[in-house]
Structure formats: structure tokens, C-alpha cells
Length: 357
Image 1 (cartoon, helix red, strand yellow):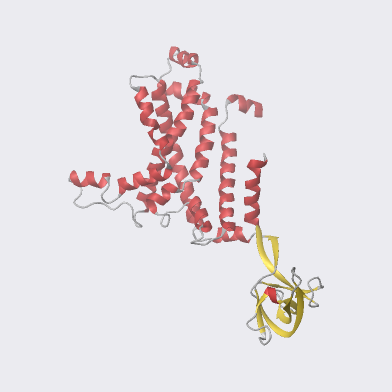
Image 2 (image 1 turned 90 degrees about the horizontal axis):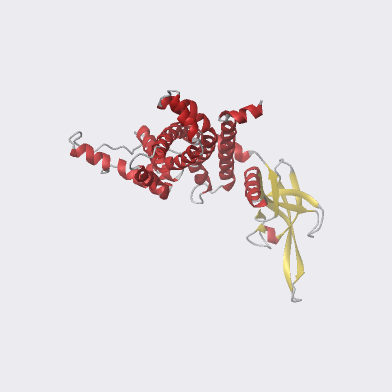
């Protein structure tokens, strides 16, 4: 339990907690003296007076240490005065300089919603959210229709169905990044599509699918790559559900004259609801995590998704803000949980619905 809960708790704290440093000004040049005021890091200080003390080292020797009486304005706009040690400030000359700057102090932590506001105010947030939802709306129905057809073909045990199983399972061994690269190569200027169009005489010059002006073709390439890569996962779950359906039910439908569509709609799909529920939840969660395919096909700049924005904020070469990245990750988790609860309520077997009543 702790193994699974601890990372989630830490991520939540990272999203809602801000860490920083502050420096306490003392009323006397002593470490444990009363606090005269508090200032933030990099605050400019005016040096009013200085005092040289002797500090005893562990080896018994002594060394000089300076304390400075300083004056500045705190965060509330009030003028405060107090003593600071030379170890907490940057000062050019300990004996002559009249100004210093705070460079170290004590660690502080406070709960804040600033990182959440920063995510919602990010100019790419709405675009990433819209694209993510659009991909889910386009990908999930296509995958389930194809997965059910593929599962029915395998379940029918027609001649060559074992070969179909091996062909369907090929994408399962390919990573999402490799899938994105494969489909990027298909849509490039010298890819399979353009080679076919030019060789067939349908076009004189290649058509550039992947470019900023062709946003729709970029989405199409991502959808095709994801459908090709992950439909087999849904198919495996559906096949397992089909194998659990008693053959007598389907044969009874045939006896009473039900055609293939009627058997599918009134017998197979209702009995498949538990399997479809699991597949819907799993596939939707994975759709929220689409990242490598988008990067491989579009570069992540023209077309972006929530997972890409999470990495963009975390990347040290870009924004280097793990706090905002944690907010994005938490937002993805909340969306996944919300849709999963909706599926649990909407896609229920007759027994589950009866128990709920």
C-alpha cells in the first residue's frame, strides 16, 4: 500500500507546496538572539555597522567572523533593522562596503495554489487539453470497432484465423516511439504515400503532410499511429471476454433466427460489458498518456498534448519547473479517474445495475 501511495502523495505535495529560503535579522550579533525581522533571498541590505568577533574552530584555533547591522525593507514594505552574519550575505569588503545582498538563510515551506494557476494560465494549456480530448474522441471508437471485428474474426475460427492473430499482434511488440517514427516515415515527403501518388501519376510533386499549415493531417497521422499500435491491446481483452461467453447463448440466438447483427447487439455485446469496461478504462488512461507518438510525428510544438506539456515544464533545458509539471501530471490523473468512474457507472452488466438499484 505504501509503495503505491507514497509517490502520489509526494507528487501532490510538489504541486501544492512551495519551497524557498528566508533570512532572519537578529536583534543582537548572536545566532540564537531574538528575531528582529525576516527578509527574502537576494534582498539588498544597507550596512549600518559592523562588528568583528572570534569564532573557535573544532581544532581549537580561532578565526575572525563579521556581523553586520543592516537596514532594509521587508515584503510588507516596512523598514526593519537587525544583525546578520557574514555567512548569509554577499559583501565585497567586510570592512568597507556599505551594501550587501542576502544569499543564504533558512529553508521555508508553504502551501500555495500558484502552480495550479500557472498551469491554467499557460498559453499552451487549452491547446494541449483540446488536442488530448480530440485524440481520445477519435481514437477510442475506432479502436473498439476494429478490436471487436478482429476478435470476432479470431473467434469464428475460420481458415487462416491463426495467421490473423499473429498479424494483429505485431504492433504489440513495438514501442509508441517506434510507432510514431514508422508513421512519420509514411507521411514524409518521400514516404510511402507520396511515393505511391507520384508513381501512379496522381501527383506531379509530393504533398507535404507534416507541416504547420496541415494541422488536420498531423492529427490524422497521430490517430492512425495510435490505432495501429494499441488496437491489439483492446482486441486481447475482447477475445478473453468472448471466450467467457457460453456457446449455448449464441446457438440459441441462431435457433430463434437472429442474424449476425442481432446476435452481436443483443447477445454478445451485453455479455461483453465487463470486458469492455476494463478495456475502456485502460485505453482511455493510456490515451491521456500519449506522448512519444506526438513528438515523433509533429515535434510537439505545433500539435501538443497534456503529457508533452508535463515534460516541457519539467525539462531542465526549458522551464525547469517540477512543481508545474506535477500539477499537469495530477490534472491528467484526475481526468483519468473521472472518466474511469464514468465508465464504471455507464458500462455495467445487468447484474451490476440490479445491485446498484
